[in-house]
Amino acid sequence: MDCDISGYHVESYNFLADEGFQAIAEDIPPVKLKLPNGDAVEFWYTNARLGKPHLDNSKMGGDIGNCPIYPAECRQRRLTYRAPLNVCIDLQLNGRKIDTVDLILAEIPVMLCSNRCNLYGLKRKELIAKGEEALERGGYFIVNGSEKIMRLLIANKRNYPLAVKRKTFREKGKLYSEFAVMMRCFRGNHYCSLITLHYLESLSMTLLIQYRREIFYVPLIYVIKCLVDWNDAQIYSQLIAGRPNDQFWAKCVRNMLTVAQVFLN
Image (tube, one colour):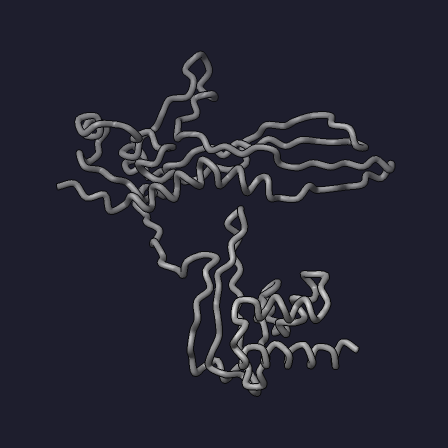
């Protein structure tokens, strides 16, 4: 019975190769420079694509061209099974596009049996002919001839609030309780940020935010006031909308708004 235990690894790598690199390129902000003569130069990535592993025979001359390389050869020759990452860079001078440069940015290790691997789609007899096991599932890399695997980590569900009770939360500071809500927030480019909403015994809440490797504890009401252009009455009505009959929660909201007014005024 076949068991595809590496399917999650391969699917994850396929997403990186098909969409991930392009999303990374689009998320990098443009670089702006000013030359000594006053000209303004700007350039940015417009495209990123991962190729397939091959041998570069261009230095040998003639019409040999590039030929595919397979994992078995990389194991024997102690090579890294990798493929070129090509990127396109648009150049702009004084607001006018002048050129588009296509170049190889790096060589990226290729996961075996991914859609960038030369073993992809081969049948059992074809895999054996290429020096592999008939039931080769891949999911690992070949680096300097050695097989390397990246551990698949299990993490909390993304963009999903998780209520947590930990005694160590009391060590955060005075009036901190053991209750909090944690959430791993993801953007479209899969950039992750972990935020924690702490409940204080003073009937208020603080939001733990990490920015540039520094941790900040910000009162929840301050964050809300920064994000929306609402007055206190609108904030109060929105916060209690889901629990209109919960007097304790209403008291917490009124307390946080009152404390915020004292400090902001």
